[in-house]
Length: 301
Ligand SMILES: NC(=O)c1ccc[n+]([C@@H]2O[C@H](COP(=O)([O-])OP(=O)(O)OC[C@H]3O[C@@H](n4cnc5c(N)ncnc54)[C@H](OP(=O)(O)O)[C@@H]3O)[C@@H](O)[C@H]2O)c1
Image 1 (cartoon, rainbow, N blue to C red):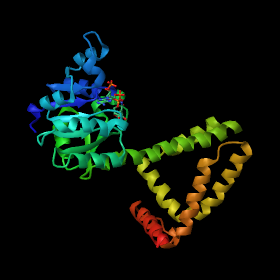
Image 2: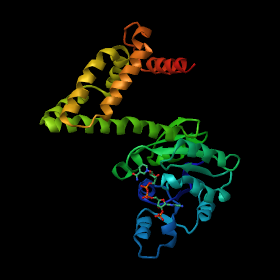
Image 3: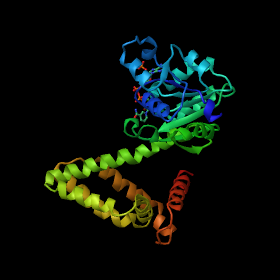
Image 4: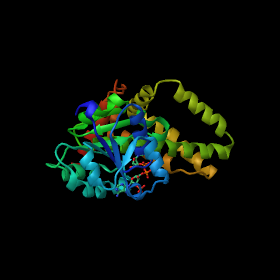
């Protein structure tokens, strides 16, 4: 796909698509078209028309019209509607199109979407990793599937920040969902730790101390220390976490996350990771993860 003849269409023209369109237009991309149910019905004075005009986007009445005008089609509906939207667009897709689903969807839905387009048109699974209103097209968009590289090559010259994360449709969505386990988990841990600290009257100093710890080194080092260190020292840490749990209970605070921490530490201890690594912290995270996967497989057989 030549950059200067790129024809881009959006299916869904909400917060994310309209901001992407605006930034891409400003970067010099022409011929952007878009469809959404409300945009199709919009009359001259409607806010969505003004938004489209400001972004240099032509609103079209149907997905079919978008397919007739655009070659690269980026779908940004709510994730729950990704497959329903694809079913509607599919009859109008041809092999020259590339259909990119950038909604926040399940891995299964993205695999199914790829299956639905097999032999019809190339499919790319994409995931927008952070809020679009803050950084616009500079937000990291990860992409996977056999044509992910084509998507990257077409839109990176206009400033989009696209990282290809594999050949498998679903990998991009998996990346977003698995990052959420950690990020949302950190939020839940902060709630538990700080709620108890607030009850005790030390929330401010505790928050400052945790910030000092996290700010004190790159997060790569923190991850390595957390994973590799825990693999070796899990048994010793069970005692401390048990004391933390007793304190939370005595304060009447939530204990859900701390109970899970203790369970995780016990499980790692039972897997014998310390013995497996000869009580020496591995240099990288991957061997720890492999050892955990192997131990779980061995437990199942
Ligand atoms: N906004 C962000 O910062 C952000 C960040 C990361 C990921 N995402 C993901 O990006 C996707 C879009 O998010 P958003 O914030 O832009 O949502 P939004 O503002 O709610 O916009 C959704 C758009 O999809 C359209 N739509 C709904 N049903 C449709 C259908 N059947 N056919 C075609 N279009 C349809 C809506 O049209 P109507 O206006 O007619 O309802 C609307 O234009 C979501 O999956 C979201 O999780 C968004």
